[in-house]
Each structure stands twice: as structure tokens, then as C-alpha cells.
Image (cartoon, rainbow, N blue to C red):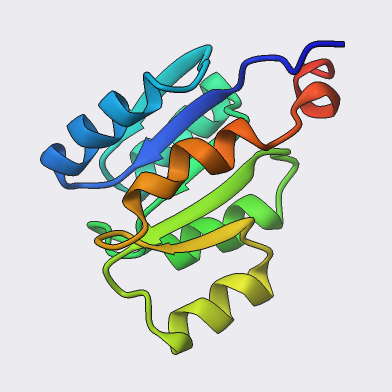
Length: 130
């Protein structure tokens, strides 16, 4: 069976980053890309769109990305979370990995790795159940 195309939710308050990430994702077969600029918008998008992948920043207006990661992992959402942050230090890395993040990347240095990571993910199990 061919690997289905995933849907992506980008959660970040930096419009330039969102534009760059959306352009990068064009290298990958993506079914849809949704955008949320803060914690509350992200919760609404998670409910309405049920993305397969969430690209999440730590620094968000209101509650931060770590709080959103906790919410995702404690809920019925079956998405994978890739944390992309300028706060890519060991402290946040340990917290996010402990919460079950799929990948933890430095937003500045690892940006280009996202398309390859998504290409190598298997989505046959999670997409077919939607």
C-alpha cells in the first residue's frame, strides 16, 4: 500500500517562519496545511482538522507549545508532533521528549530536515482511521 499523504498543522506566531515552512512542505506530498498562531487557535484546528502532524513552536502567545504538547498527548489526538524551536536547549529537549514528542529540532539549524522526516514517516495506520 502506498504511504498516504498526511495533513499538517503549523503552530507558530512567526509569519515568516510559517511561509518558509509551507514552501518547504511543497517538497513533500501533503494533503493539507493548516495554520494556528497561538495555543487557542491550535486547539480549534486540532478539533476541526485532526492533522496527522503538528509542527509546534515552544514560544507562543498565551500558553506555550509545551502546554499544547501536554494537551495533545493527554487527549485522543493521534497526531505526531515535531517541535521546532529556537529554545532547542537540553532543558526543553528533555521535557518534550519526556512528553512524547516525535522529533525535537532547532528551528534555526534543523529547519531543512523537516521535509525528510515527514517523507520517512508512515501514515497508513493513522490516516485510514480518520
